Length: 193
Image (tube, rainbow, N blue to C red; front, side):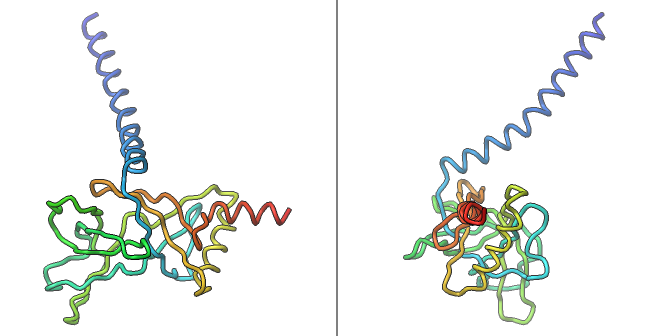
């Protein structure tokens, strides 16, 4: 009887742990969305061969390359801390990139090294953890087309709205000229009916 009781307790603890982990992840992301600082990241055109996979838009960002002291000190895939501020138009600007967590109260993102030059130009390209914008499957194709056309049209400004808190970043929305891509697609679908 005692071994059955022990097995039941072990089973319940394992089940609770399996439930706790995903709930904790969701709550952490919701906390970033609710309490994080909002930044706008200008997007850059993507390779037209592979701009969209499944139900998400692949995003590239302008201004994700910085000058570093010595390119030999950095490696592809290495974890880095990107400190941020906003420019006069409200877009995110990189203030520094470090291998160490910032000690001041400045906002930062935990990211990875995407590319480091090896020609002496000392440039590092950052891979942000928010490069996919997921959408409802029925709207995904229209969103892809809308995003691509906006990237081609130099008169339109496309950017990602990202919330940042304690190094975590959550992609909140993709906007074209200040309007959510979800709203643009919804309006276009209603007009097309």
